[in-house]
Image 1 (cartoon, rainbow, N blue to C red):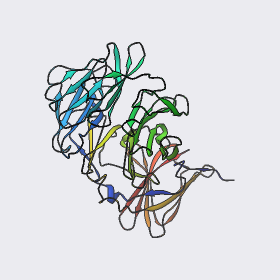
Image 2: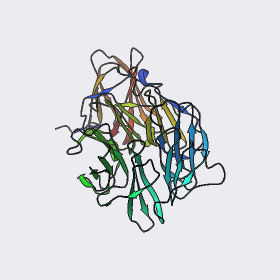
Image 3: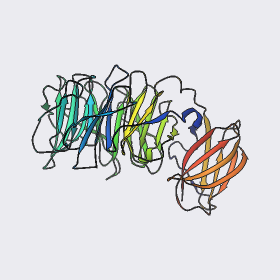
Image 4: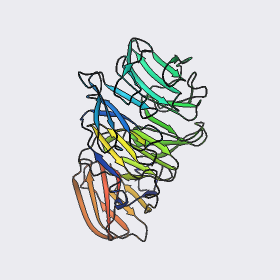
Length: 415
C-alpha cells in the first residue's frame, strides 16, 4: 500500500487557496525607523490614524524602544526613549489615542496620558524579572502578568484605566505566554504544555480547560466573542473553539512554523509567525490562504492589530512593519477558490497535485525556504505528478502558475 504524507494535517486534501493576484499587494512593508525586534503593536480603538509599537534590540536584557505612527502606519518615529536607553519591551496597549501602557524587562511598567510625550513608571511590585502579558477589555478594565526574580507568577487587575492595580486572588493555573478577554469578565490564557486556562471572574481565579503535549507551547489566543476563539502554537497549529473553550478543533497545521501573531474578527482570521509566513481565512477557519509578501527578508511576525476601517498592521523582528489595507473590508472577500488536492508518495517520492477543472496549470516551481527555485517544470493541465526523487528532504513552497497568469502557492514537506 502506498503511504501518503499530507502536509496540512487537518485540512487534509481540500485546501482553499487564492491566487496571488488577489493578495500580491495586500501586505506592504512600511519603514519603521528601527531594526529592533517589534514584539507588539497596538491601535487605539475607534480611529484610523494613530498606532504604536514596542520591542527591544535583542531578545532579553537589552535596550527597548517605542515607536508611533500618526498616518495609519505609513511612517513611524521613535517616541521612547528620547535619550539614553531603557530595558526591552514585550507588550504595549493603548486604550485611547493618548492613554497607554508598555511593559517589559525588569520593573518596567510605563504609562502615558499624552500620547507618549511623557511617561511615568508604575510599581505594582518590586523585584520583577519581566512582564509577560498585558491586555485591556475596554478603557477601564485591564490585566497584567509578570514573573518575579524568584520565579513567582503574579497578576494585577485594574478597573479605573490603570490608575490603580490590585492583585488577582490567585495565579494558580494562569498561563504565562498570552492572554485575552472574551467578555468583560471572561478571559483566557495560554502557555507551556499546550495549556489553555479560563477565568470567569475577570482574572481572579483560573481553571485549565485544555492541556496537550509537554514542553510544547501555545503562543497566542484571541476571542471574537464569548464563545468563538482561536489559539496558535508550534508546528503551525491553529485550533478553534465555538463553545467558550469547552472543546477545541484543529483548523490549521503547517508542520514546522511557530505562529505567534493571531487575530479573529468577524469571520476573518490571520495567523503568522516564523519566516514572515501569513495565513488568512475569510470563512471562520474552514480554509486558509498562505499569503506571501513582497519583502526579501524573512523576519518573524509577532503581533497584529486592526484600525476601525479594517486596515491592519503587523510587526516583527528586524523592525518589520507590514500593512494590509483590506483585512476587514469587503474588497478581498471575492477570493478565487481553488480546491487543490495533493499527496506525497514516500515510496516513489512523487507529489501528485489536482486542481479545479477550470484551472489550467502551465508551470510548477519548487522553491526552498530561502527563496531559491530548486526545480521548474513546464506542463499543462489540472492533474500533475512530480518526481521529487532527486530533491533533498526539507520544507518547500510549491508555486503553481496557471495559463491565465495567476499564481498559487502552498507549503510541502519532502520526506
